[in-house]
Amino acid sequence: MTESIVEKKNDTIRENMEPVIRYKIRPKRYFNFDAEEMEWELEVHLPGVQKSEIKLRILPNLYDLKAHRGEVLYSLTQYFPWDVETDSVKTKYENGLLLVSGKIRDPMADAIPIKLK
Image (cartoon, rainbow, N blue to C red; front, side, top):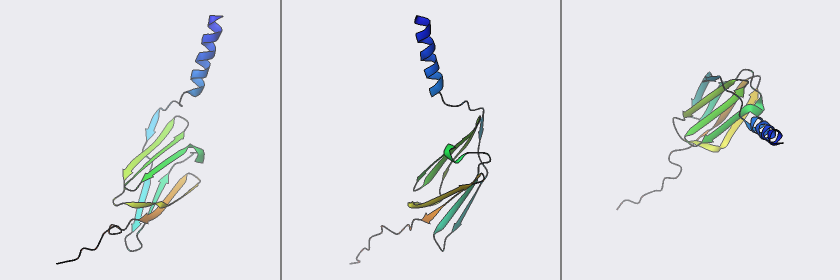
């Protein structure tokens, strides 16, 4: 009787385990920006990855991307060269190509004028 309980516990543990990652790859990516329009665009190549397996997180100065395909983990964490407006970020994923774009935050947006005496 004890054996069957142990087996059930082990099955439950196996079901909840993360997939085995044998290869960790930094995906090919291209980063473009337009300083006049204050816009940026990131293109990341993720061949064979399903949309549901992509996890993208963005802070004003940093982004983190993780994507699984079988035993492969595509991993990319990188700082932006300036702060971005996180609420302007748009994404599109099609045929293994992830496009992420948004606006560059105006560095003087929160500046306050100082009266000279």
